[in-house]
Length: 349
Image (cartoon, rainbow, N blue to C red):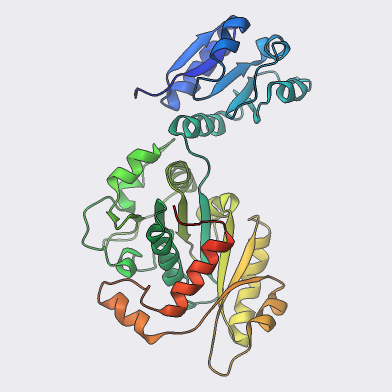
């Protein structure tokens, strides 16, 4: 195990203890086991996280411990009264050791790494050729330029490789095929160490070999590792929906749909919109201006979604990408990405 601050585990129940120790081991966290509530209160504020098992929850609550982050009430029985005790303890979550093990492992690991959730942005095209991959790359690069720890994930195995857009296709580091058999939790810091990182931007892309499939579980592990170890995670989503894309959509802070300002593109985007609204918490449009086309307000009205940015086509972007210099040569793209990051509260670090 790594030398991390100890989690505080409060229980006298041997069966709960065994289950909780297994969870803590999966999160790679060193526990300090405490069966005495007075001693536990003295250690309450110093641990990376606190797990109060149901057998001592009421007794611990009576000590009126100080409020802190990363307190979790864990149980096996599911007593409805546990939520009242959770409120008294200031616990942020109540976890079942039987049904919620994966979520508990992730919560403990995030607490150990000392980070909150990153801003996770999904980007997809409302139609083919909308420029979603270019926007995803530009957003992640813009975040890195602000001093944020940024991760760009290529979620489209048939997209050609987003590393080509940011100009790092020759950089050493892991690609998706190396993660196809990944199961369980991935350490966030370890993930960043094995990926290509150029100018502060870590990128997980596809290689030039035969396309391979990743599972929703693998995508979930990668995204979980990303949000625990970065300020900004941007995922370039495929236009073909399925379990892998849905895994990202369920966790996304916001999902951006890139839509050119013309009737055909809006018609294509209608279908994607209906799918997105049932699977992610927030959807916004990035409108692509077209000469002689509609304006952004009409696109917004047609799709009943807000426009967060409007981009002007810039022929220099394609040439810059082909030269391996990335897409941020375009002024409209730079300003659009800056406005999106500002709207999401991602100010310079």
